[in-house]
Length: 473
Image (cartoon, rainbow, N blue to C red; front, side, top):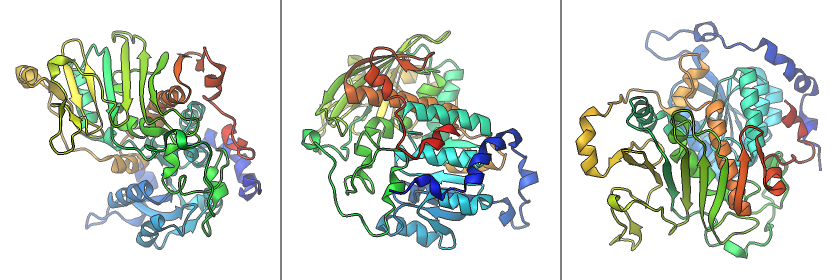
């Protein structure tokens, strides 16, 4: 098998570490031109964007970034350019140069790229983002930020050293819930939170696979598919449609399950504005259909976070699986059967949608995912305090525009790696508990799991041979 580093420009690769001393972020009026008389941005003020991973989620991300009017798409990169899922992006941006290997793209076009969208499978985020940042490129990385705890550590560190703009793709972190949670916390409405229940009870891709999965399946490799680059630093397995183009999320080696997929959209604001940090204890309370290869059919994971200055210790329970519903306080209501589906539901909380219940000392809040605003529950309590609740403005840039405006020096990104990296590490720890079962004890100061060598090794597994250099940038 070819050595994946052979395609890199060696001189450029070795020079990257010397770039950091000279990195600076210039004000946009030095870097970009001014608006034209008809209020359209001239080409000189557009961010030159390269997209890596252009099908499915990447297709949507690219469309939204382009629709903001702040970028020019100069390059498209995907390991499967002949796949049906990548055709729309190629048609929409037919003038962009195309690549199957991100390393070749940077070798040939680095000087023409200002920023990068990374919407590849979870396990490959790390190497691409590290290389991009080492070259001084701003990066928008889909959630979860990376596949392992150690990868997140390195991404946070390099983001700080390079000074580039970073953004994780938890899009709701620029929406109503973000601004509401921030203002309600600052006003003392959300306070003394001791318990949070978060849930995602929709069907997942691996549901129904269960204990029947005993090995990776194998199928013929599609024409022109760059399977070796697809792995990046992850382990090698045969090609199959249970890995590509979307099923990779089901497997421990490549995905992050329901928790890593939906957690960033549900727990992001609570984690940030309640300053939860990293948990010291993570317990797998439930693991239905546990398997060595794919995620459980249902799981309940409990996180315990220590007291933070004036904030009390907090317990967060995560529930996934179709019938694995969260426990709720009796005064908030009871579960009933939906007349349409026969499934259990709960009002004012709709368990047919992902969401959370946040229990404070005096108030309880119910909310959904992404940008969904919180509600004070029960309704009677909301009516008592509605006049004192802070109002928020809806006039803010969305997550995509926020990233590009930050690249231009006009805003600060709302989900930079120093924020989204630690959030992702909570999910990394949760996945280890899902995978191994039992309870793991984590020391936030030493960044280590203290009661299991097996679990501790999963914090930072060794990369595939030939990809070590990305871990040293």
